[in-house]
Image 1 (cartoon, rainbow, N blue to C red):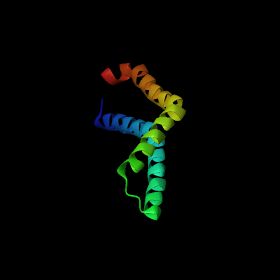
Image 2 (tube, helix red, strand yellow):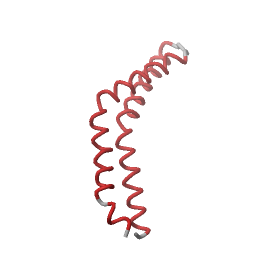
Image 3 (cartoon, rainbow, N blue to C red):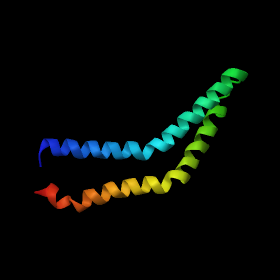
Image 4 (cartoon, rainbow, N blue to C red):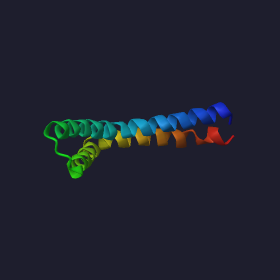
Length: 89
């Protein structure tokens, strides 16, 4: 097992984690931006006004994108375990 192979495997793992977390992070960012604009225009500086909608948005994105996220993670895990005999030698 070469150094390039280990780095490639680690890069693939990081890419999978980024792809799996992208819908939640993106939706949380979008909701946070909308709430920030609302707070700036109305001059309401309540912390829970920004916190609670982000939690709800992330929870809803997990419900909506959950099967896709699970598929991405399972594909990576299946490929990793299916090629385990190549990694050991």
